[in-house]
Amino acid sequence: MRIAVIGAAGVAGRAFTAAALAKGWEVRALARGEGRIPPAEGLTVVTGDAADPAAMARAMEGVDAAILTVGERPTLRQMALAPETSVCVDATRAALDALPGRARLIVISAYGVGDTRERAPWLFKLYFFLALRAQFADKERQEAMVKASGADWTIVQPVGLAPGQAKGDWLASAEGEIRRATIRYADVAAFVIETLETGAHRRASVALSG
Image (cartoon, rainbow, N blue to C red):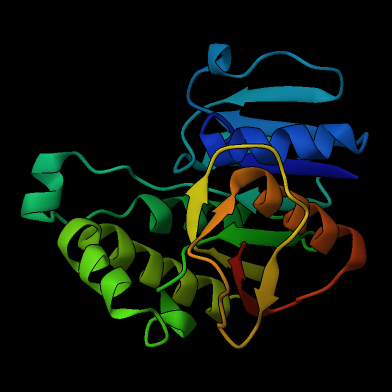
């Protein structure tokens, strides 16, 4: 399988890239800086911004699936002012335009967005409002855009992400149920690879917890 990882230089993007390469898949990794991703067999690094249609088209060329894992980590000043951001929306628009017609699109969102907004515990909601209001609004628009598209999509909504080796134990719930408040990046990557292998969760949102 040949996949594109959009946002490949981030922690989640590196986890997806490593998991796909371990399967022997070809990976086209889109990142702003080529030096941020170590070379590997089966890996092609495409340098560019995820919002740039030309860069996205290069990354998507000939792929069977794409994993979109983009977002903005806000500064303390941004948290206080909550300025509007469109990082996710801009990248998603470019991805939908460039995605080959037969390819799947896996979008990494966050628990507490869209279908799971009302199910999130009140402490989650308070933190989202105080620290990530603009980022979650961006993801809300992103999810709506994906659902309105004709793409073969899956939206993954992980809870808090943590480092460490994969445990191989997670709860994937289309009803928005969660078990633990965190899940490891490596387990999210393993779930996404399994989803692509099995063809599960088509045109569905899935809450993912450890």
